[in-house]
Length: 327
Image (tube, rainbow, N blue to C red):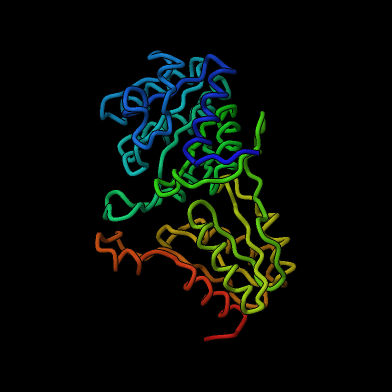
């Protein structure tokens, strides 16, 4: 094991896959000469050259379309968005081309492409640069959607994504690129669609993914001080969702709280709650509760950002509500 920053784990995954397979290449804004907007691709231009680490104009629709075409013709592109907020300019290519091509071609074309970059809030960036689009992309059949929460998962899941023959949306967090964690040395992959039970518990299940796992873990630690045992599950991918792991946990704890940063309507949390009430209703001792972002565009002011976002205190309150310790 070795300690790596989140950005370093992503870089290792890309470098290892590019060394292994000459069809893999990276393309996006500032990924080459500038070493990446968040220094994820630092040093990659020097090793692989300008034909495999490609700077693009500020034209997401254009370079995303080029990536989809390259994937249809046998290459394995990694398309970096400086933020998934900018992917909205290219969403037609992601949804109407990449995600649907295998179905529309009757299996004649696969599109082995990875769309990656940061999602959701990252400080005082206001409404147009702070949006969580996980549920948007997860809504589309033909895509796989991964949201890692730590460096080890980031590396193992990104390697799996690059090798996958389906288009994969790989969503990171700008605020996590500097996070450090222990990463296994040598070759390893993490299968897509398998959740991780990161903390065992008996009283309540807390489910989350991505950056919000920090909130879930912190809440569980504080709850333990009050003799409340929380089982914490990291979904890791939100399409496909590992419902089985969540349901088996709920059958044990009988209570569920889901933590997600996005807007409440049609969220991943909504889908998980539906599936649990459908398949584990008789095991529930309380209604499923969600701790979500606010149902408004994210403001700029720090006080309003704090009010918008989930935090450990909101999760603790929800846990106590499902345990009927508070109203």
